Image 1 (cartoon, one colour):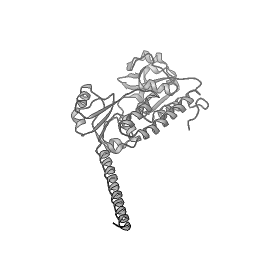
Image 2 (cartoon, helix red, strand yellow; image 1 turned 180 degrees about the vertical axis):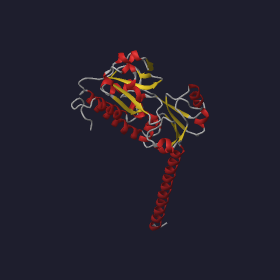
Image 3 (cartoon, helix red, strand yellow; image 1 turned 90 degrees about the vertical axis):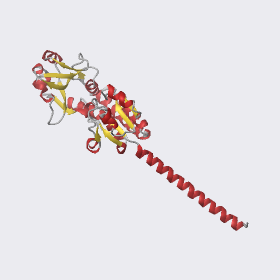
Image 4 (cartoon, one colour; image 1 turned 90 degrees about the horizontal axis):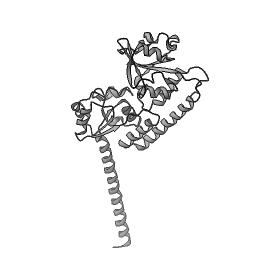
Length: 303
């Protein structure tokens, strides 16, 4: 074989090899894309869904629960399996998920046990309500769905936002005593006491919980309301169809002589935004802080 012939043969082999490598690369890319498309996530919990959307994973979500209210498109674009704490195994599994990411509040327990026994990958997400737990939750979900880099970026932003919030808290001169009213039914208020998300968000906003003597969310008497003597009352907005009556909180007899009523200090905020402890938690706490301390000089503005 002459030199020219050998060179031609080598060049041809190189081209063939390059073509083979290119084809292998394309096949691998197609396989990765197919694997991604095969992932069918069932998201249970408003915070879980919010994080998945923030990480750009919404295309993998096949269904959500009814607490998944942010972004609003989650409930309109995805199928629903009902309320987070009243799930049915049949309803959940009928969505044919390959991965279930669920708040630990999902229930009832026997249904969750049955779902876990089905063989579908089930990931529990802890429901801690602290400044540290939110970025931890983001990183956990990011690792599960294969988006650790995006999760790290989001978690770092949340940590920075909480740090800015802490600086704002240091500017508060006189902390207010605030009562969180979850609902008013039959003329009786259910308030958020110690160990609740309400207590946590009040502390983050630089306020003292007026109902610290109450554990959990509990109905209280008019006498107790009078003893709380809050400077302000916080209620959750649920839209025009609200049947919980929290918007009537200031009319309760037990609050009639309190500073909150005398100053007409009622703050109404979206329930998921305020108590969801998702990526927007620092903003929610800051908005509550601004509502409680509107006077110039009492809080430093957050950029």
